[in-house]
Every structure is written in C-alpha cells, then in structure tokens.
Image 1 (spheres, rainbow, N blue to C red):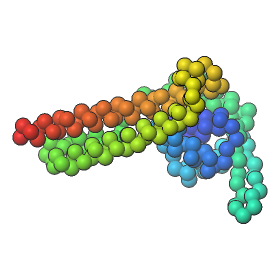
Image 2: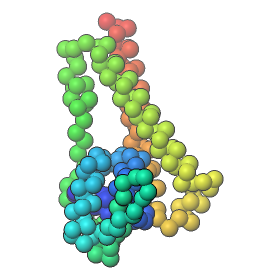
Image 3: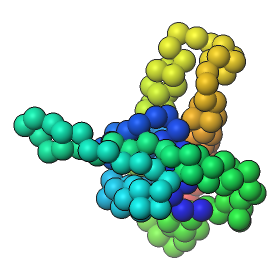
Image 4: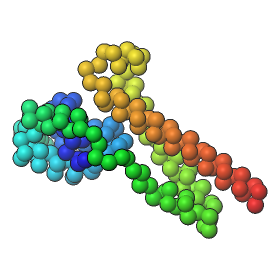
Amino acid sequence: MSLKYAVLAALLEGEASGYELSKGFDVSLANFWPATPQQLYRELERLAQDGLVRARTVQQERRPNKRMFTLTEAGRAELGAFAAEPPKRPMAVRDELLIKIQAMDGGDPEATRALIEERMGWSRGKLDRYRRVQSRLLDGRTEDEYLRETDRVGPYLTLMAGISFEQENVRWCERVLTVLRRRVALG
C-alpha cells in the first residue's frame, strides 16, 4: 500500500489543506500509517496531477495563500476499489526495541529498563491523545450511539485499533519491567 490511499481516505472527511491533513494524520492515521508533512504535500501534488483530488487556492491576507484539496469522483472510485481488495501481505512488525530486547542478555539491565520505560511513556502519551480524539468524536454519546448515528464509522474503528495497540504496548512494558525486577532480585 502507498501513502496515496491513506491521503485519499483522510479526504473522505471533506476539503482540507495540506496543513490540516498533516495535523489530522498525527491523531488518526499516524497510529498505523505515519507520514511527515513533506510526504503528505508531495503526495497531494501527485494526486492532483493524477486527477484523484482537486486543488484550489485560497487567497489569504497577511499569510501565504493556501491550497485546499477535495476528493474527485475518480479519487472516490479508486479508493473504493482499493478498500474492496484484500491486503497484499500480512502485517509485519518491525520494531528496533524488540531487537534490543532480543539481544539484552549480554547487556546492561538498567539500560534495558530505561528503554522499556521510555516506550511505555510514549504509549501512554499516544493513548491519552487517542482518548481525547475518542471523547471529541463521542461528544457525550455512548460508543454504541455514536456507531449507530455517525456517517463514517471507519475513523472510529481505526481509532479503536490504535487504542487497543497502545494498551497492549503498556501491558507488555509492565510485564517486561516485572520480569526485569524479578531477575535483578534473584541475581
């Protein structure tokens, strides 16, 4: 898969500038498809050249003009076709921390503990952000009410995946720290 489909999916929310898409990516799509603002801008330009998005310039006083992007019918059709096809390959986890843990037995246990605590802090921070997004989406409704009433369920379902992923990261980190403490106590 390419960034192309992540950007097209983000534009299902409606017209947005590159800056707005970048900010939205940080709290929605980045939990499973990270991208830098520069990558997003380049992809938006390619999508506009391919006729999958339409770009318009908004004149601004005292600021540079901004470009707003919307999905075209061709973009919607391509995104629909993409959503219907099976993934090309199963998900693979590529995580440098897991390699470090695999190699930890000959190293410094204190350094390993610090790495795990850092990861746990990142995961807790992401969970906090995801829960703020969830609260904003629910807007006082229960999850069941929201899922029944919303026009677009996809963003919420992917948010649920991000929350579950980070909850599991925190659980794993807590377990690793417990194992490390027990090993130090035995040693």
